[in-house]
Length: 116
Image (cartoon, rainbow, N blue to C red):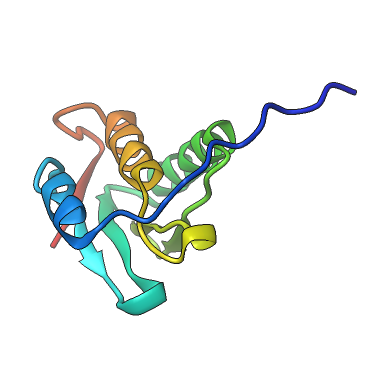
C-alpha cells in the first residue's frame, strides 16, 4: 500500500486576508463566529435529483482535496460551509475549495444558483 502524500501545512488567515479573499468570490459569506467561523454559500436547484448530484460532486471534490465541508441538504437547496478544523479558523484551503465548488456549476450556474 502506498503512503499518501503529506498533507500541506495550513494556517488560519487573518481577518483582513479573509475579507480580501471573500471579496473575490460571488455569493459566499461569513457564517458563525470564533472557532465556528466559516465561509458558506447556499445553492438552489430545480429538482431534488439535481441537488443530490451536486452534493455528490462536492463530496468527490472534497475527497480529492482532502478537505471536507459541512453540507446541509434540503429538498432543492444545499448549503456548503468551509472551515479548517485543525487551525480553528479559515485557511487558504477553504477559499480554494469554494472556487472549485463554484466551478462545478460553471459561470452561469445553469442548473443551480446561490441564494442570499
